[in-house]
Length: 171
View 1: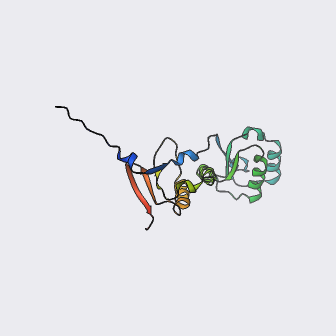
View 2: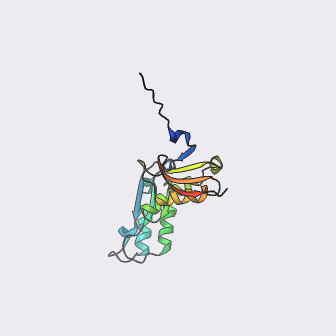
View 3: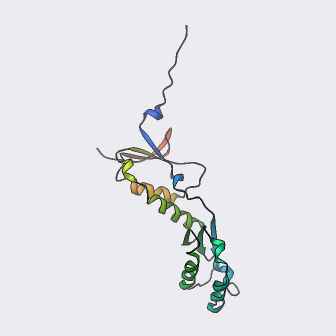
């Protein structure tokens, strides 16, 4: 007597749509420019010296890179210094932000998420994939939840086989 078992893939039949935030990860080199290297005695920024540095610096080395501009020292840096750096980096870098690596990743993800056509998820049961090979900042998940909530039937976090409910539209 032969026993035949039919294996049913309940996840496939569930109608869940998985959205992987990693798809919004822009490939490219990330660089942090720390203005601390331009501080006199690690404390102050001398305008004349800084302007000379900006004039002589090889900005081409930032070509097609994502650049975060910051100061990791506890020093008073005038805002114009960051603006001047952004002005010099803009023709070369793919993106320039003020802040650390985390701020850079947040900006990059949110800019890419902004191009998402949320209408394709209207009335769908959506799972935001919770793990993968690409580190996704929490800010990306927050942005996706913000823009998807008004259109989806339900929103979950995790994997289709094990989700955490986030939102369910009231019928």
